[in-house]
Each structure stands twice: as structure tokens, then as C-alpha cells.
Image (cartoon, rainbow over all chains, first blue to last red):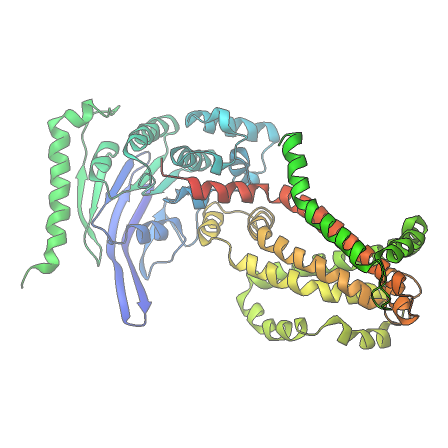
Length: 262
Length: 263
């Protein structure tokens, strides 16, 4: 059984001018421990897909299953890292406070909680900043706090909604490598949504290419690049370039489809 | 902030009041008017009545009632505000009544309060609470409604308990607005405190002022008004100290938002 299974997920939006079909029968599966990237043209409903997967939104038809159980509300074993880290971290709490908040329900002892928090912060390289408030940190550091918060929650599946879109290129490379290390260390299943094709190919075991709206899965591209990945060596490989071009071609072709004359 | 800076800030805030005070003294020195006696007479009345016997017999009872009324207003205003702010249908249903009642000035309610509760302390406390609750209630509702939806999504995804959501998310997020309502309530509460002592009171700052006015003891009246001003200033300053401490995260957060660039 796949860890995460999406079956014909369809989502409509109703507005004054009628019905917009954002997702149209999206289907794919994610294996345990896999790093799956999702790319697609702008406006193709990537965020809608994540909202349905995370249980924040109900699909119009079709379903998403976590280990065989239908997702109707946010599952216990799933965490989400939001794109807008400034808004998702609570400014009245310290970094430690933010992490502690998601552990409250677990009923753990104080020592255990501190240990988990210290480990998570060490994993993201923020061990010295536990007493800071998120807004005292740079954007890249804040996103690391958000990742640490997701990790400390000990999810089996980690959903990430274009988490590095709002940071500069240098920080993005560092965060990508951080994420790969964390993935290897914690063995968590990752569904990583991005608009950046290079990033998707660099990080993923497979890349799912979504179509233009109404969105369905256009293609699933396996990424056979060796691990551990490296920003220089991996991106130097011809295989990387081929994969990248392959994905880009699909997105480009698909984007131009609406303009073709029947 | 070093000592010199503190002194300089203090000087910048005190020089104008001192100048105006001195001007008042000089300009009123030869006054024959009944209602605007020389400042010297007012200060004499001030010293005799308020330093320091009057503090215990008049100021303490008044302020005790003020604090009690305000406390009730805070408890009712915040808890009701959180409940209504979180339940849109309930809020919609009660909003017309709230808007209606908050428009009623405390003096208009005073006779009705006396009829129901008599002249004692409980009437005064209830009247103060009635005057103070509306800004707190409305600002709390406002604050709860304007919690960032992304933070609410976060609470859902990470399955925060209802208690954690209320105490660690909603109320802190709403606290800047709640404090704004509190500041208004504080000023209002002092006014209502005086109003509540107009009829059938036997002690209190308002009682002293009203009684002095009715018996034409004008310097005593002005002295009482001076005390009221000092009390208002002190209460507000104390409030600002508390607010600055409680909302330290807020000021820091807002400051960083202006200065920040991604990365």
C-alpha cells in the first residue's frame, strides 16, 4: 500500500460567474520515504491540491488516502510547511515556544519535549536561536524554523507549499540541501510543490508534472540521479539537463495548448 | 536608554505644562470671578483637602470601585468578545443589540440603576462596568475576527486543541486590539466613576467635586478636578507601561516588517 494515494481528485470553485474546475481527476501515489516533487504552470491549482491533501479543503469528488484511510480533516501524521513563513510562525512566541506549541497535544514530559526541540533546531542549524522571536531572524532562518516546527511534530508525511519561493537564490540552495539532509536523517515522506523546475529535479525521486487548468497529472518523471545530491556535481550531469528539459518541454507544450486551433 | 536621554525626554514633556501652570498662576492672581478663582486659592484648597487625609477617605473608595467595575468589564468583555468573534452567526444576531446599548451614555442609565440597585457601592460598580464593557467587547470581537487565516490554517493542520487555539493563538493575536479597547475603557471608566457619585453618594472623588460645586465651594471644586486629572494621567501612564510590556512582541514584529527584505 502506498503511503499517500490520490484518486481522481476533483475540486470545483463556485463564484458569481459560474463554476471553475481547478482540479480535474488528479491521480498519483506516493511511496513511503519518497521525495516527490510537484510542478506545473502558474495557476494550475498546486496550492489547491495541497490544501485537499492536507485536509484543509474537501474535494468536490475523488479522494486522498493516507495509508488507506480517507483524508477528510487534517491527519495526525501529516505536517504542512507554508509558503509564507512570516505569517505562519506566531510572533508572540519565541522559536522554542513555536515548536513547543505543536507538541502540546502529545502529552509528553518536559524533558522529552526539550530534547525533541533541541534535536529539531540542531537539524536545521538554529540551535543558538531558541530564545529569539521569529521576526528577529532573517527570511531563510524563519523558513528553517517552520521546517523545524514541522519536524518536531514527527509527521510521517511532510507537505511543502513552494517553501523556498520567497527567499533569495543563495539561501534557496542552502535550504534545498538542508531539506535533503533532513529527509535522509528523518526518513519522512515529502510532497514538495514548486514552480522551480531545477529545484524539482534536484530534490526529487520523481517529479509529477501537472497540466494547465483544469488540472490533471500530465506526466510522472522518474529522477534517477544518484544520492546524495550536490548543487555542483548533480547539476553538471547531462542526465540532470535532460530531465530538466523534459519537464520544461511538458510544461511549455501544455501551456501553449489552449491557444491551439482545433 | 541612558540617564541623560531619560532626563531630556522628561524635560521635553514637562516644560509646557509647567509654563502653562505658571501662566495660570500669574493670570488668575487678581481674579474676582467666582468660577475662576486665583490658582493660589485652588492650590490651598488642594493641599487642605487632599494632602493626605482626603486620599484615604475619598480617593481610595472611588478608585476601588473603578478597579472593580473595570475588572468586571474586562472579564465580560474579553470572554464574550472571544465567543462572539469566533461564531459569526451569533455575532450577527447580537450586533444590533450591542450597537444599541453602547450608544447609551452612562448618565442616562444612572436613574434606572439607582431604581434597581439603590445608592450603594454595587450600583456604582455596575454602572462603571456598563460604561467600560463596550469598547472592550467591540475591540475584542474585532481582534478575534482579524486573526490571520493562515494562522488558523496552521492551527488546523497541526491539530491544536481548542484550548491551545484560544489561549495561544486567538487571544494573543487579538491582544493589540484588545489593549486599544482597554485604553478607551480606562478613560471612560474614570468619567463614569465620577458620574456614579452624583446622586446619593457619601464618599468619593466625584462626590467631593459635585458637592463642592453645589455648595459653591469653587476652589474645592477645582482642586477636585485637579486631582481627577492627576489620577487620569497616572492611571494612563501605568497602563502604558503594562501595554508596552505585554505588546513588546507586537512592536518588535511590526518594526521588523517595515525593515525586512527576503533572505
